[in-house]
View 1: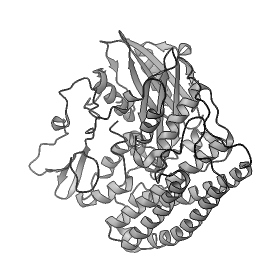
View 2 (view 1 turned 90 degrees about the vertical axis):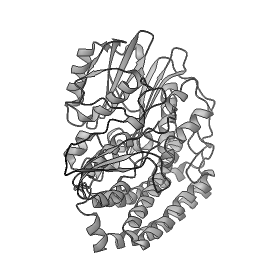
View 3 (view 1 turned 135 degrees about the vertical axis):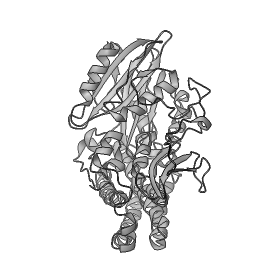
View 4 (view 1 turned 90 degrees about the horizontal axis):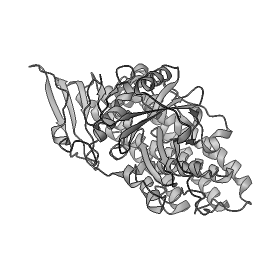
Length: 498
């Protein structure tokens, strides 16, 4: 069946194929230009597995949904040999349920979820890739790191100082977020959605809220749509500026570091004034908002953005004209467009390698549906391209927020969009909700049961695919380049370790 972003399907209308027909059909759809898998998961019943695969096409703007049903002891044929980005989904299902995928190159653990099928699998016995050679050596970093970051081991295989292979192992937190999202929607689940990845509070909470509103049949009005879009773009501006600061720090450009740190503070303090949280917690709520924008908030956002933009352009110009900094970033940590496609990279990581993947354009949501959306890309896929991509996207987000504010100010005389009573979820529905967070494509998938409760919930942060992009970026690089390569992606541990 075909659907679109935030358009639910009635499960009884979905045709469940045999596993052979399912594989054939999914393979055909993925071979189409602009197609990729956004979600692929299994739901276990008493005596069977139900498989659901959502395939988004960036050109047709559709999401094709294919489903299959198998017995608990049946194997599935792997799609990974043909479509490499599927390996993440198949490894996850194998880890969760013990499902075997024939011809998969290596069904190693993905994230060590707390409810994994084989409890004997722990990070300490992870099957790292290895090469037998007297001329190579391995370098282990982590799982405890020097900075205030989350745990995870990084294993480098090196020839001298050159990295031949990097393998990254996450899964130390065992949060069980997806299982806690089941049942009737309540405030606790809303708070959990904000904590999926703390630097993407708006992106993830918006995806969660969108699933609830879609499955309950609620359509938010233009005013609340605009407010949510403004929040999403402010989050993008804040984190991109913070990431530029981190890149400057790692190459000892202190002026760039402290200038961007100060500018990021202005942006997140905008959230503080708006909703009482610098990370926008509490701002996004289903069926309305507790913090409707008024004239004073509009003026404050404009004032802060004006100050930020003028100072940002000054420091961005200095960064892009500093030869020593550019030399450190250019042709370092390169991910080609072909590699980005194979790895399924999304968001900034994909666009910096020439792929025009942006949900605001390909599968628009909220007020993005009512406007033309430009996708900005860089071609070279190196650290410099990811830096330039951030600088370009910040400019774009400034323009978007200003445009949204102009439209919103015409609506301020209308009633405030306070939250309404929560309508019940429609029974037996499947829905995919996509938002374009600052890292890239956030996908939340929901299934409601016959009584209108959440029976299944699946979360995908863009880091799920993009961590592999970091591993690719390190091939044939000096190991001393790892800190700046890592900073140029700035991926989420907790967004991966659900």
